[in-house]
Image 1: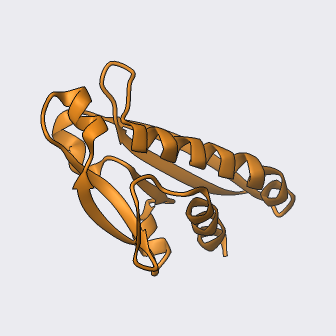
Image 2 (image 1 turned 90 degrees about the horizontal axis):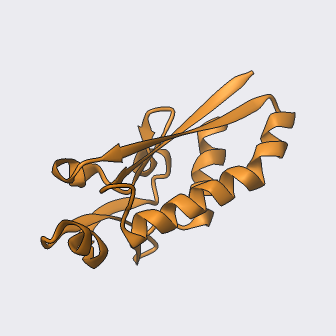
Length: 125
């Protein structure tokens, strides 16, 4: 059976993460749930690894890797930028900038389910 490992890296402070990473996590889990059965029928198993980051690793927070390849390299139409994350600021007590993605000139603080699903399907083709 072929395996697709999705690694989700996000900031974690005492079991809490910011709102944008939380939403990305929800989208990842929904995407896996929706694609799991059809992909198993094709002999592909999806595994999720959650990597919790400390404050000094914040530059990697809210990132997704598919078999070690960042989402922005899996999907050419996705670019990564950084913008203010008030939620992380609340958790750390300091101003923070976190990763966001951009497609079609639209910035998404969290990674939308449609983009996650597209990356999963592109990673296995």
